[in-house]
Image (cartoon, rainbow, N blue to C red; front, side, top):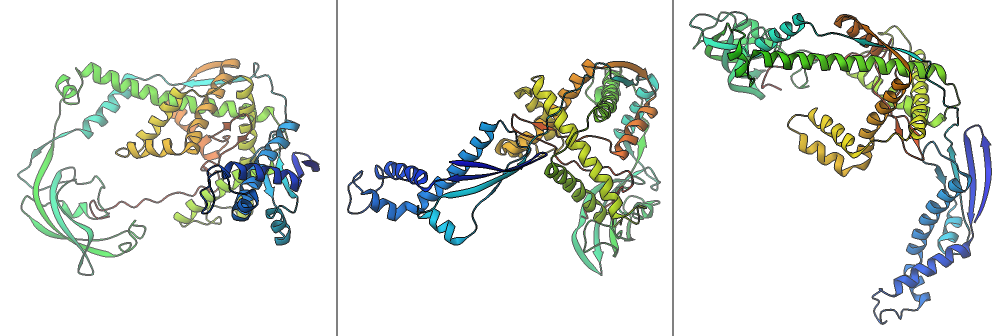
Length: 491
């Protein structure tokens, strides 16, 4: 094998590799010899098939295998011999001329190919012991617990039959048949549907027309589906619903006491309040962690400046840009609507992409130096957390990740990144500052909108550190989703 370096400029490297035909021929003959021992060819005893005959029958297919394995093996050897760490899978360019390809496959020509890639940049890890950080914390007050308890009470309120007419805040049980252009449409029919008037569960105008109805009443509710309704065939169209009222109920005043707590599965009211306090505390801790992590990434971003692999930046930008334009398309927004231009937006997101790649490389390199790893238990916890995001589909989620190693790598990335961030926090100068809930929420929200983050899925193995695209939260180009409320059972 002959290897010639054809390009070494900045992070870019290119090599031309030539493997002589006789080297390939040796490997082909070895494989054919192995094949002869098990080949079942008419007219020949096993193990007695002449090599030339085997080569006529299987020579090209075996050569194809040999060529592929040679490219893989020699590409790895080029990297290992020179101790090069590519930033991504090297691009392999093979001969394009049919005559040259035919000569290789017939064992009459040398195999030549080129490798092109960018290497991971080298940089000196900076001391973070003098980095000053603030951990913003919120104490859970009794008033906040009572506020949450009030919302819980409203969610689990009891109902009692109401003999009179329904008012806003009452619950009606209805059946209905929906029609568009005089025809019943799919999903527009239901029976025994409970509906709290004023809850906004149904399309605009539907619930208001139920004020004043009583048990046994029948009426026709006339509404129009929103233009942005999820079912294209119904969007913007007027509809009529033939409604039958089965019953009317009014909310029952619940006493928040031990009995109420027992209805929710708790020993007494104090245990229920403890659960609420713990949940609120966890929510605040999550926000505190988000803010602290962002501050760590900001501090790192100020400590490092080095050349970045162009392809990683372009891949990161591509992921951001696709997510952005898809959201803008869904929201029917243009760059002009957001007070910017496509050119300016692309420049802004290119800067964000560079930041994410830079921080990904720093975190990956630091994690490797400190021996930070994600263990199996942490990975399983991450998988369980992901599964909980899809109630009722947990098994499908588990199956997906178990069958797709690359998907598991994506789960590993955020865990690895957080462990590196935690390590950095342990080395920095951290002070605590008590703030209000509203102040912490504002800090987290402001930073989400400005999208100062690095990438959320830093991955690192011993050969590759790559920043994964993350859905953007635009500062100037915030493509907002519009969500039309749908008629229950009618979508």
